[in-house]
Length: 228
Image (cartoon, rainbow, N blue to C red):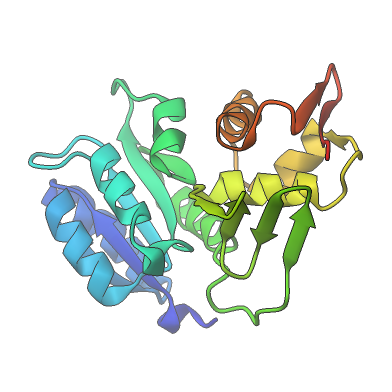
């Protein structure tokens, strides 16, 4: 997908921040759309269907967490990558952000070159423009459809945020195999994306809550494996 075909939605109630980010990303050739609050972001996202949304956390009317939750309820935005934009010193929890459905976060202020590198890394996660194939796993009572980002358990669909789904698909692709933590980090988050040490643990915990505690086992000091 060419840069001119990539749409990025910026959401922040501070015009100066919007303008700085817009200028730097527009200079890279991306199509940029903006929203000044969460409610407006939902409208713009539904219309534009962006590949990436950069979302401020602290906003009036509807904060970033609630906005992210609402965005993830839209099936047409399921593959959209969402990154929270956070100020240093904000009372922000990575765990809360991931629980809301975010893929990553960007700390402001951020230098232009770092911002563009971060955006490029985030956009590598978007699969919307890729050719689809029959990527469906059936393990025990779980059906994991990678083309549609759906998980069916006992004939009921389980809604998973993007990273939880990708982690489940990776582990379930080879039941019984132990995936090392560094391998999981590289395959799901990529080498260029810096995330917290507890990121994998948070995602595994949430998966266990949704598909059952006995499916994903911890191999102490090594990593995780999926058990049928």
